[in-house]
Image (tube, rainbow, N blue to C red):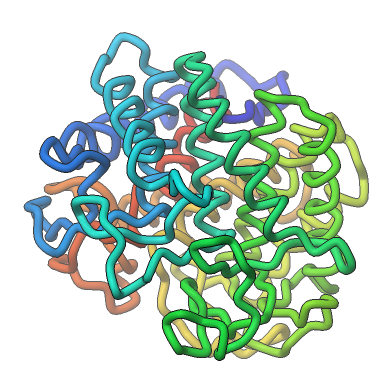
Length: 424
């Protein structure tokens, strides 16, 4: 289940009452505004897996491709709902439904690994030619480990193990650490444009072919930590430790910003700072350290805090609240959009830092309360459910599509389920 990042005891009865009211408010949104919006609506009863394209009123609209990222994320969310709300059979049904597609269609029975993207029926198309990506494989592992935790179905753990082994066998960089990220269907790393079946110089997540990315490695850290919690295998432990140290010591640089791209030997390739990923990784480092039984490691805690603090210093709207999209490491902000997922990750990070540093002068708990109020006013659709793609105060549109292959229920669900637990 989600890690329990709990606050210190000793609050006054009045403070406890306020926390209870806030928790009830957030849990109401989790139930009615997230879980009950997604499930069972997104279940594809005809072709299996989950539908991903919905308009602002939650009507199906689009080609409904089956990408491993979306299928994995919503399978994970359904499993979390099943564990948290065991009296509601919809979530267990959805978790099993999502897992069946990951096992029977998204997984390549001939060569192993999860396909990056298929059509709605689960067929390879000329658009992707069966390519695979470590980012997607990570979300497959993440989902299957969660399904196993929710159901104790050994088939789910077996597929999580297979996904980990496939990536470790085909993608691990034994010379430099970390993982190659982009693969042909057969599992051969795609390291230049000439070897890319799609003939472009970009991979499936937009990284220049041959580079390593921060984005893939922070989510592999999350996936492997989740797998290790349910399967304490020594190789998984080694790889999770390796990823934690890479994210903490190589990908993150003072004063608390992450490089986005790297050459194979981890030489950074300059780019803008992604503030949402910074603040998200503040949480992910703490989560991984807990899974590895290193929750008190001072270096990991310090780097996690620096990522959150740097976002507050350079990527935070100090007037209205909200995380900006990107900018220079020490300013200025270059893109002032406030994308939905980064706002959810800020909630997660603030509550985590409030637990670790309750007396810090930044007052993380106050920031959490204020940001939740901001999200309710600007991000959450009170009529149709879920979150707008952008915060409306930053140019978002209320009638933008509510879901797509890149907008699942993972960021919002994880942040708010964590909040429900953390405010107990």
